[in-house]
Image (cartoon, rainbow, N blue to C red; front, side, top):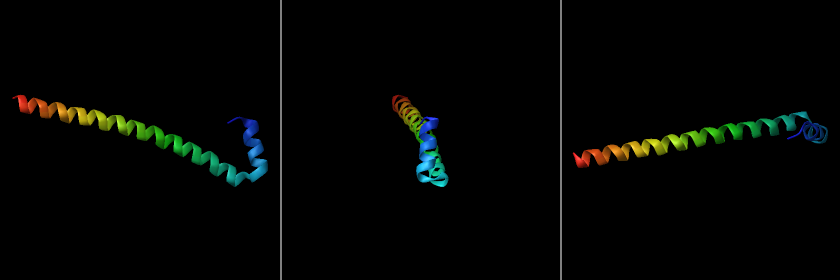
Length: 59
């Protein structure tokens, strides 16, 4: 989002609404990154558990 776009948004809908849009966009982006990290961690955990199960069955 360009500065000119933000200025136009402020003049059209007002400062509080614009601030809410900016904060929502930031929060959604942050949560998206955290969910991606959580997904990767869960996949690693699943692989580790499966590896342990295979080792126990073989031993």
